[in-house]
Length: 420
Ligand SMILES: [Zn+2]
Image (cartoon, rainbow, N blue to C red; front, side):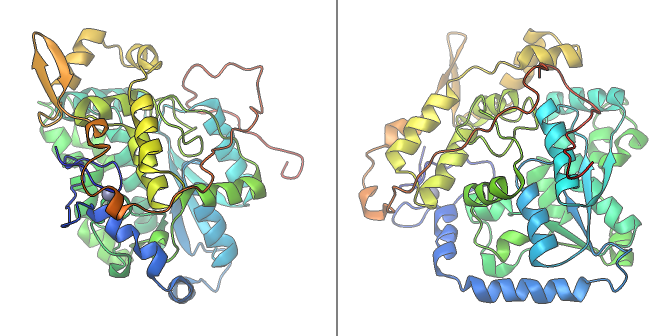
């Protein structure tokens, strides 16, 4: 397989990459814009856009922000509230795989940043039925999280006539350079279906389930109709088009300001992004590796290489080391879903990309790896400077005496004296 000469991405990246004559991928080339665009002017554009949506009544929300309490939630809410001066309504889809730390962080987010929040918890029986189907059709235990996270905030915006939804970075732009920052790409039904949902809309999931799921059951995961979107005037923008996105630096600024909890992750060195979920950096990432031949640590290493904090060689070591780690959370998931290990393995094996994996004598073998392309011709010609600190902080657990070993569907958060 072909690998980028600058970062670690292979040609079978599911969001699709192209390579130029120097062997550099489209994601790396678009990323160079972070060093060349006039970001002060872009921030002014964002402020003007925000002014157009500002409500004169403080009782009315100006915009919707989808949050989980992890990932870039803190930076987005902080920026919208304190840089743009808007009055946001936070909206969260309950992903069911919550850690206690995630519940605490989400509670801390809404209290420290003083925001109203609306959350949606779909019945666990329905979520399990949907997860069975998406494992069968796509080998995914995360479809309901991705669908819920991308539908519920837009449903709320349309229903309450709040015309602006504000997201963080656009993954297709940031990872693979699908668009330029100057395209100012916005939220679309098409991108959501093709990339976030692996080509499977909620309505199609019900149709393909052989009667096991009804349209009513998948309704919470459906995007509003074009008529509803047009009637409410809802649009969704990405802050990453207006600010030079640097997840690590942004997280560290927010940690200093608000003091939320980070934690070591099973299969990546980034301790900031996904501490709210048992599976995202565990079993879900292991499935990514079994499908595509690389895991989340590759995404994080590519990001750090492009931001000049990590050499390509150090990135390869981190990516390989983490991809080989067996996930510890498989029994927790199988017990919740009521599935046997053998059935689970067969469903995932059916989704392996033949460019990455082949079966010999009953064993799956990886066909290629970035390890074989460490000294590829042209690597030195396109190398970025590296050497910034690439350490990720791990903060103390606020409730060290309570075990964090099962899903918390709805739980008490952390409310400190300032916000009680
Ligand atoms: Zn690249």
